[in-house]
Length: 457
Image 1: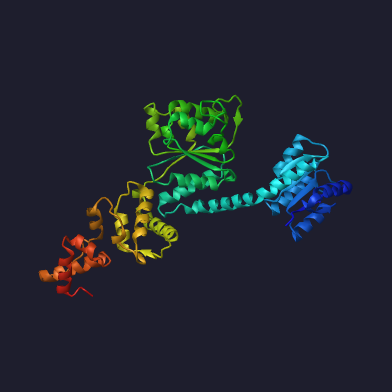
Image 2: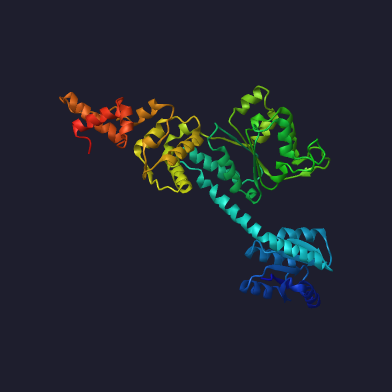
């Protein structure tokens, strides 16, 4: 369908001339409006594909028109025309949401090209906005799970910091404790969510490559620099730059990062022009940075600069009451991913998970649940579905009958054995293989004892 353009201008002669030129060769359909309110009413009835509006009008100026249209349609292409170009009004129009600010008399070929480009880009902008909304929901504060007071403190920290756009943030804690998730939650809960979340692991690249990744380079800066490239600092403008494992930065690169944080300006490698950007910096480390400062491996001035607001993520072993919540969350994720219908995790399986100290923290728990869900067949996740955690000894202890269980006095040894086997079977959710492992006997021997004691049903 031929796109429809609404033209708003109190100069009807100019508006009609513009419409005729845009309509040549069937490029655009058009409607002309002399008064802004009539345009707004028509937009409500039948939204246009684009709007071209004059800047200076007696009732409402083009900046106000742009702002009002943008509130109802965030992605509508809007072009503001003026007879007298001024920098202040151009900036105001663009801030209000105009795609372009053009001076009369308008170059029709230029306007046509800009209109076509804006119309072509609109689906991409809408898709990006939808993805942005999905990301905001995916990394909302409430997605940081857990009922332990330390988990609640993490959520409070995110909420407090997200409302303040400028401070640099330092996240400390062991690997796998969720520093990446918290960094994204801060970003998507803050005004910086309008920009990009850009992440780089400082331990993944040697120093000379890391510098070019961060600050970019100009064409010819080194042998393989055949064209200029923007660095991640520049890409993250108006958004968030996340430096993971910041302790691995070389001292030379630490100095350059400090200079950037102090001025918010930098130069690409091989460049002479200073580029100014504005974004939030979030850093993370699984090391003790204060110790690194004492050892001379990390600059004290940079440490103070990146740790304006800091928080230490609790290891999973300190918040074990959150394990059932986290495990159930991962069960739901992998149900969707693997198209399975595992409805729950058995108490015995949860007992195994809660007995482990999780040196790899939440990341390790996720990996364990992922593997368990891959091989699970039934509607309930049982101990037999879980991979080994630190060898059989820990897992077997976790599913063995309660060491404190009591039996009436005077029972014969065979009766004690029967009850112990019955309870072990129950603790292992009826798994013959697992029960045999716990009891230290063969499956054949277990079958014989179950038959002897009437425990085959």
